[in-house]
Length: 305
Figure 1 (cartoon, one colour):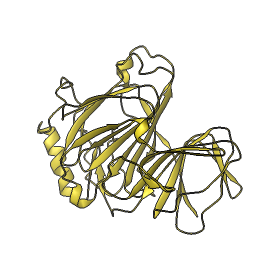
Figure 2 (cartoon, one colour; figure 1 turned 90 degrees about the horizontal axis):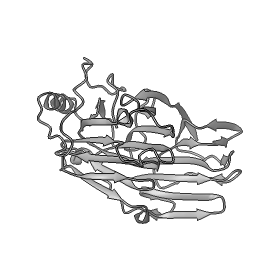
Figure 3 (cartoon, helix red, strand yellow; figure 1 turned 90 degrees about the vertical axis):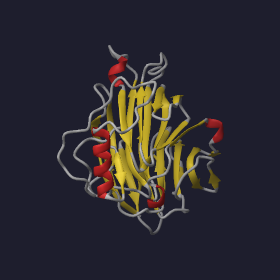
Figure 4 (cartoon, helix red, strand yellow; figure 1 turned 135 degrees about the horizontal axis):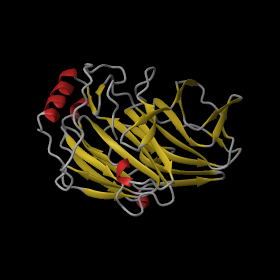
């Protein structure tokens, strides 16, 4: 059953990059292990200085960042020395674990070609993996399972759903899908996981006579699954969820099951104990001056992607 509708809010993650922020939300911080979701773009107009879109080097702990593009290109650099241009249909999966710093630049001539549009989520790590060694992997579209049926196209980004299994390495049971529905197509939620939801990227859906438009996240509880009907051609959804990991604290870009670990990460970034990307280390984002303590509510300082 439909439990909650989350309206996206506008947030700024760089001088010119405005995003729709979906998670965390005050009434529902997580869906399965997913604790963060941003929708950037589409940006199809050339701005005077594309570098104003850049997200400078910044830190993470206790999570994996998952970047997925519909259009354009983004250059990723991190403290492991990795440099990767991500293109539409690919997945950049970066596990921060004990700590990593990375940047996202829009310096490629193709960065805004065809309209830059990206979804980024954060996946919290199980307690036993929160201090795991940082890692980064780029997955190509051909590594991700695709399923088609009448009026339905879907790509399984990570986890398992609808009998499909992704090659993307995850630390806990979850599912994450890119789905495109044609008008009047009926659709149902995957049944493999306890917590489920979807974000409407484009188009609209009807559930029990109510229409829900793009920019909304719909969260579902246990019970009778609803009949989801696409109301517009090429309605695009991002489905996600999985098994609950329990409560997490979040402050800026840090996620942990322990408040004291976030305090340590704040001090480590302030004192320069994080390693910056070796090929992008001339500038970085300083620790926010917000004085709030880590809490189980959305943080004061805006998280970055």
